[in-house]
Image (cartoon, rainbow, N blue to C red; front, top):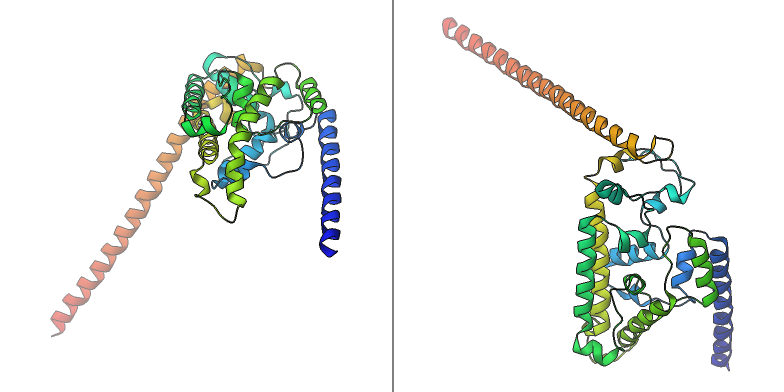
Length: 328
């Protein structure tokens, strides 16, 4: 009787939780808030398979990408105070004015930088080569004989909707009304998901993840969970996502316009930004030279002081030893 009561309460609680989650997702998609992407990737409340990965940093990165919390578009949604080596940054109200500095630096192309833009459309040659490598690696993973046994025929990774769904390690898309609302709020410059192709990619990942997740929760495991094809595919995709965003961070370090945020609204636009970046680069070099000169002066003064103290001590000791000799 007690177990039957617990089972009934658990069933009612799960049903209530799913209704609350669906209502929350519909509200986010209706309002066009920052979590509308999360509603697109999560149809219901359940534990996502990628949360079973051993790499915590990869799990955190994919979760933030699902919430659209990476890229210049996410960074400029709120003001930032100066901290460590970062300058204070104001909020940019218009999402269209949150540009991709890699596209502008390479070809002076203005594009809004979102997670989808970095993963799919950034025109920097290094990013294009990295995406081509990711597609080739995914095609090789899909040719694994064990993958063929477990999953349906692999999708076409050349399609952007398929690649974006696989990189998000999505095993089930949201309901159709939520997806339509998300597409309506993307606007100009946003990436609209091809739902049919994305559902096929999600079904392929779901078929791979089910034996892996079942082995994790099974008390009698025929083999280690990381030996399953789903574990290998999920770990490989998570590593690809990490490498892609590390490459972005490394490339941005060499872009002076990104360090100065020269493309911010009200700073004269791209033409003035080019001149400002050039002038700031020269000024930065002059300041570095002056700072190095000042450091040299301080170091030389300290060495001279130490030598002077040592010389005075040596003279004092010599005078004491000579005076003691004559006293004898």
